[in-house]
Image 1: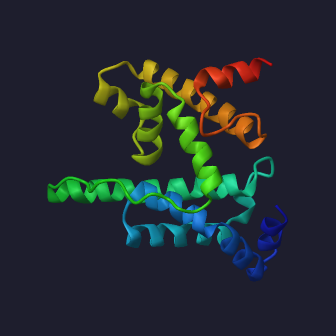
Image 2: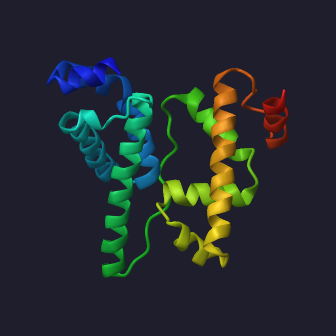
Length: 189
């Protein structure tokens, strides 16, 4: 948070320090969403430009990395939706998913393990929402279920994801082998 406050004061070296510490992780997320290096580089630039222009937008109750990843997801989502519109106008389908992220392997493993521990329906909806930028109504139409059911699955999945990551970062869960039942059992201890 100290770096954000320095950026608010116009300290460009603080922005450089923040960029050096976080840009690989932020870029990895953007690449996963967009799957296109040129678009991802532009979205990354947009994220750090937003940090420079509006550092006060960082909620002091949240870790700065969480704010950056939120900005990254929003920036990538805007790029993804723009590409969807462009491709729809030109009449061809979107390309496949991007390359695997190779930065912050410990956090990446925790997130993957958490997703793998979820029921397939929850995992798929979370991936659609996060990586494809789909809305609840779009997902409901895709799977033929009511919007309320989709929201419930997303809410349950996000809760499980959050619980898992909290327990894993506290060292209470072995990320390679934990299941949903393991998470529930450890939470109740």
